[in-house]
Length: 93
Image (cartoon, rainbow, N blue to C red; front, side, top):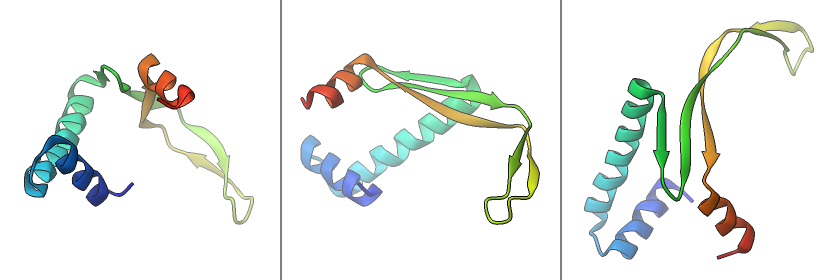
């Protein structure tokens, strides 16, 4: 699903105009980014938990040449789905 399709679906489901749905989606993305940057964790009931994790420096390989290289230490976002989401996906509800 593209962002435009998501906006259209939200507008349809919530009875909003596409402009208002776009503002809502943009606001959600902004809040998620700010919260992860500030707190490093964002739980959303029924969806899951977004969390910033630190990845250590490690050795890797260039996939084209097979040459070894060093991957810098960095932060990444991890997502752990909620029980509700897992059950919904697995049970098809």
